[in-house]
Image 1 (cartoon, one colour):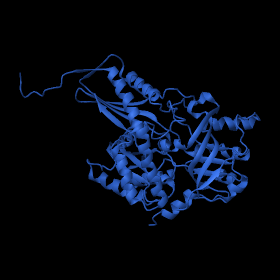
Image 2 (cartoon, helix red, strand yellow; image 1 turned 90 degrees about the vertical axis):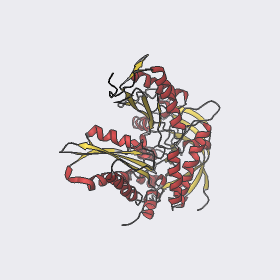
Image 3 (cartoon, helix red, strand yellow; image 1 turned 60 degrees about the vertical axis):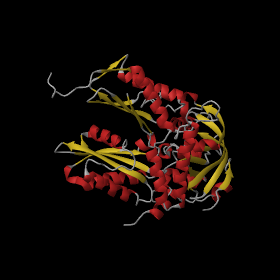
Length: 186
Length: 290
């Protein structure tokens, strides 16, 4: 297996176009956490032309809601939630500048098309290893929608978060290709 | 006195405060200490997985369980909806409060004291209830004077991939297998494979769902011991699911499921209810008897 490639946010067009589905990467820099309700609110704000609480330009969103932070720690456990629930809102966010998404599971055709058209990338993280993943996080800052509790938008600083490129700008999908490769044909 | 007369257990008093304390401790323990049966199944699957990426994923899952246990951190950030199964002995007398309220209080304390995520909200406004209540409580009255509590934090991602349907009797065994297989194939990477598949067959619509959930409480790797036909179907389904190629984390491989557990009961002559409850690899449940 190849050594994972280290990449940093903000993700440039050059880095994004060089990523291929199946690439292992270690992502560092600042990203946002946002999931179901936060997505709806961002989407509605865009619709109304309201100011967004975060700058979507070049942003990377991690579909996650951590456990509460115990004393003496930076964050509790954190890991990806299933991405398809954000599909209805995602193309609009990508169109407005969103460059990267971190989650788990398949995306819709609309999301994949937006990834291609606007040069974005969807990374997969391993679900259910949240104690391990939390070790990549160096700083957490509450940014918006505090009343949503775990679902609030947080800006987190990560170092070497292990991810796999799921959907790239060329329309490739690692879930699809890997599944076909390992399927036992009857 | 008639010596042949069955000796009934004496009525026993159980104070609610012990129920609250037990529920609290069980939910904290379940969320931070993955069961030995699941760890064993994961280690065993590591020897069978052929995909290098799949192996890496399985290793990380095992490493994560260890880190969570040592640091008293939740294994997964989704610390679940609090599902509680209670077997209440008919000769147990609950004193000092209300059984359900004492369970809810235990859940409240666990999710506050254990720094567990509160993941329960109003279905329409999506407003978080703030303390992970209400819990989903199933109470069954059984013989005896004791009280058994099973705490099962159930993640939303895998629950979302679950289903229930009413087949026609003509669909038969093949129809049941098709429902299970199709559900797993459609779920793909979503429910965090390797998964455990709980299947409830028969009963009514709601009973099939409860059977499917109860099937997830069985120690991972143990087959159905009550009915050989079910044990055979479990083996066959597991084998077919693991041919899918989905693999650990959906990144391709041989291990898509660790187990398929079937539970069954008779149903109406017109029906064949089937429920499929998907469980991610963070298969958490702890129990105690008061």
